Image (cartoon, rainbow, N blue to C red):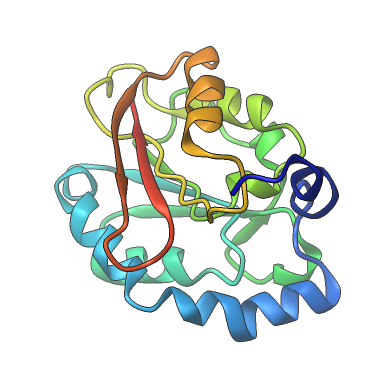
Length: 182
């Protein structure tokens, strides 16, 4: 159930303070084996990729797992929250990624697209930084809980940013969807 009022009041900002601590302690561990299942799914793309971008990396769980599993992969972790700042994480907003044009092979937003102030601008930035010749790779995999914008709303914004929908599927375990864009 998408609730636009909750979207405007609760979601359009990064986790800070108590919400960051609660997310890291309670919510992120509840993802279970989602990171590994996503990495298994992305393995063909990541095996041939030079750089993975994790936008809104939070406590960095997915970025660390990706770096562990794909040692040759340059994993760039971006996070706007000062509460998740740590070595190896670039503090920046999705709307203004500090990366060169076409410098990323695969990008992922793991339950973070709902937290950016301007989703259209963030999707535009993701489109800008990905490699122009990597048209057949899935470039973005947002996972959004059901109280956040529905897949159709994100898909419209992604199409306006120049992406096309490659695949949309519900996760078999978690109450999220996986959207792959190219």
